[in-house]
Amino acid sequence: LLAKDVQRGLVAYCVSDEGPCDTPCDPCEAEHNDDGRFGYMRNMSQAAVLDESTGSDIEQQVGKLVVARQELEDTLARLRLESTERSGPGLEVASALHDLGVACREGGDIVTARQHIEESLAIRQRIHGKSPSLEVATSLHELALVFRELRHLRTASRFLQQSLEMKQAVCGDQDGAEVADTLRELAAVCVERRRLRTAKHHLENVLRAEECGAE
Image 1: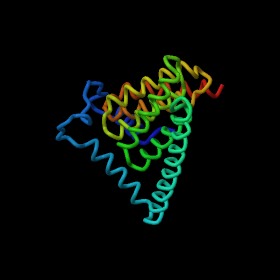
Image 2 (image 1 turned 45 degrees about the horizontal axis):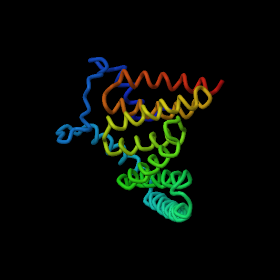
Image 3 (image 1 turned 180 degrees about the horizontal axis):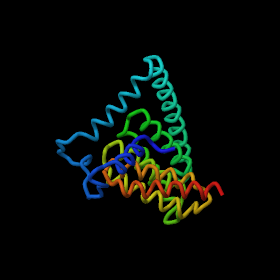
Image 4 (image 1 turned 90 degrees about the horizontal axis):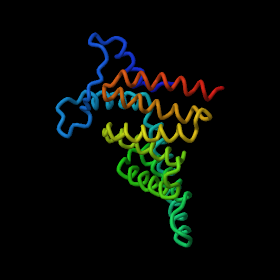
């Protein structure tokens, strides 16, 4: 169940001669960073995945993403038009924006993904106000994934923490899978920031969340 980058981080935590590193260091976010180990390793792992696929498989996947994105854009345009005839964009528009943002992120269009997710989050926050909401928590989680792609790891961690707290407030012990999903992402970001002790703590909480959800 654990992402590969989390697994690598835990291995490093266990075998490092120097012990775990929890220093407040975030080399991935440095504006001028000469040490490109993390980005290099990440690009190499992505390249390895691509090498395992044939050209036709990749073309099919890209084609499906293009079709799915176009359908989502058409749905969003229709819902926007309908919402102007009522009282402004509502939860249906927010959901369409969220889904389109996810599709853009998965297709590699991170800038557009961020715009859609941020707009979706703003609508959901306006409607739900200060009340804890799973929809708002989901938008926060997805926005964190966008910032992780942009290598803004501190920001990604902050949004994930906000998402986690809201999910815990809404779900309690009733939906361990939702909570565990965000905990895994938090652990992965901590590994990338070399905060391995914190990553280990989050992964231990993943097991607890899944156990509570299974009861």
